[in-house]
Length: 439
Ligand code: XUL
Ligand code: CO
Image (tube, rainbow, N blue to C red):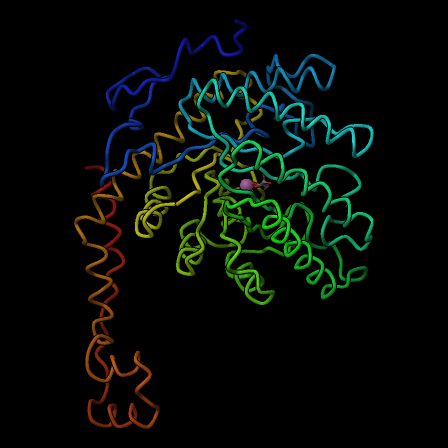
């Protein structure tokens, strides 16, 4: 059988931290159990179809540089089928249990909507067979509502009702495809849902349109009996100057206002968090605190570059903070860690796709081991708990039970006087994290 990835004969193996083979895992040992679950079950890694198989390495200054033999046929449906073969070969050799796609990643846009649907159906039938033969599953599907010129002014938030209708029709079909393939979630990222200038934008109406669009998606989900999770992915800007789904807090407020909160969880992307001026762990924590952390797009930005560079995650600290949030909420449920990441333009070869994914999987596997130990030892949690001890008893507990008042607390202060300033011990805590990272 034709192979697109001769550099890995059968599959990427776990060899342990001392291995010098760059094509072996040093930390990701899929069957190793941590707290009753295997690494595979904790981490639920997914490969992002768009970057890994469709990305050609183009940027605004130059053409594609990547050697991708499956993209070269020149005939769109043939290239789509070859890409699918490459995707399943790569994902199963890597040992990632899942993949994620946009409808237009896996099948090309046709001459009209009906032909686009036909193309998608044909590729979905082939994907179903490949899922069966390889065991690779679909973590989530989504619709690309941002690449085609018709979506230049947005999809659900487009001022033209005709475009809004097109987006709904496209999502309907993408949801059908996701359900057909046993997708474990369906995702919404508002690609161009935002604005460039308020001079041509009715902000209130666009917010209402977005709510109507998501409400109809919930209706359709119920109609077809798709019982899986809906995910919404925040991003503050790029491509539009101001994206409506700015960050976790904004999205949670929006969903609550429109009666949609019960139907959605969030998909938090590290690079989107930092674009919003937050840390990855901040966005994860805000989502998790609301019981709404559903899934993760695991990547990283670049501190010197202010855009969505979608790099492979390699920072152990950031991954440890992320895994602390994930473990404390008891895992990601039906979500997973999707590598929404691409090699740099100069990393031209198919083997670079393995290096990127192997490093990212090892980063999170190592972070899982470290976070598990930090939680089990209870050092950080114990310190945090002790800081709030005053709210567990006496007048502090009364406050939390709603049994206090400004008047009662004034009496407390008249009696107790000035509070003692206590250290937050930030440096000591950072040192403890460092100690776990090297151990
Ligand atoms: C864009 C982005 C998307 C979503 C899926 O920044 O993250 O690829 O993850 O539409
Ligand atoms: Co993403």
